[in-house]
Each structure stands twice: as structure tokens, then as C-alpha cells.
Length: 211
Image 1 (cartoon, one colour):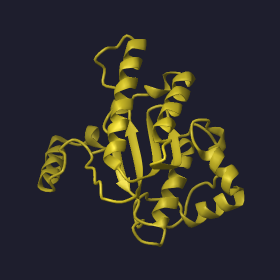
Image 2: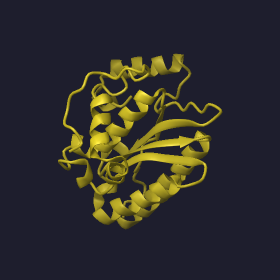
Image 3: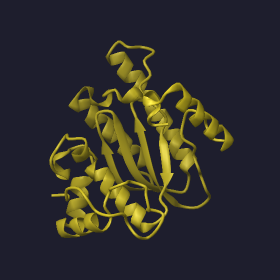
């Protein structure tokens, strides 16, 4: 559904019918909340990928702090995060995904109200729904963490992970060291994100290293 705007009407109808047969939401991601502690890759984007978060550096900083505060509880483990001008990513461990998604919805609601007021744009839709994907293996976990930290480089905002101030990349590099980070990048690359991650073997490597 990510490419909805680029689909033909026939492709859209086929996609909706496929989701209906799977008993999934027709226009949003499904949420699978299984009992026990699990790790998830959570991501959400501004509506139609407009750079609403990135309206100013101050807004980026304030939202980043609010997002991290939301996950900073005894019930959650925040493994990686990144905020970009029009979307965000988090790698989190939790026992209650539904409660976490409800808190994210509240954060999105508060920020929408505040930002629309600041820009005199009442009624504007600021967010599309939050998507979650459960982490299936250690290979998947490390590849997602690499993907999150590499995201600002992927989108061309900076040349190195640590040059982007709105992510956990600098803390991660300081914690594990550059040699370990580089080794994990080589072992768990981000090419074809999702493909083969349910196995212990990572996909082939391409791309730049963390620097």
C-alpha cells in the first residue's frame, strides 16, 4: 500500500481485494500483537510524505524528544531510533504493542493539533498510520538497526551516521565502537530490506559503511 499514489485504479482494486481476503485493514497496516516480550520495527510518515516534522530544526528536536520520552519506560527497550523531516523509525522491545500504538496515536494527535495551530492549517492531516513489523531473528534485528541508523544517509541528508543529530546513531557508535559497528554492518547489510531476514543468513552486502 506504500505505492498507492503510483498505482492504477485496477492495481488499487486488486490490492484492496487481496487485503480483504486476508481480513486486514483495507487502507492501513495490520497489527499483530502476540503475548510476551517481542521486538518491533515501528515507523510512521507524515501524510503524503510532506515534510511537516521538518518545518524547523526546533520542531525536529522537540518531536524527537517526545518520541524518545514515549518509549522511555520500564516496560520498553529502545534499541534504535531516527526522525527525518517527513517520517520516523524506531526499533523497540515491548510486552504490550497495543498500548504502545495507542500512545503513539496520542502523540500524533497532540503534534497534529499543535503544528496545525502554529501554521494556521486547521483540518490538515499530518500523519498516516503507524506500521509495525515484528523482529523475527537476530539477523533481522541487526539489519533493521543498521537500516534505521543509515536512513539519513540513504535519503541524502548527511554523509555519515553521526552527522544526523536526530537519531541514536552517535550513541550506538559510542557504545559498541566503530570496529564493531562496521563488522555488524558488513554481516547484516540493508540491501533488499526484509528479504531473507526471517532466516539467520543475511542478504548480500552493498552500500556504504557507517563511516
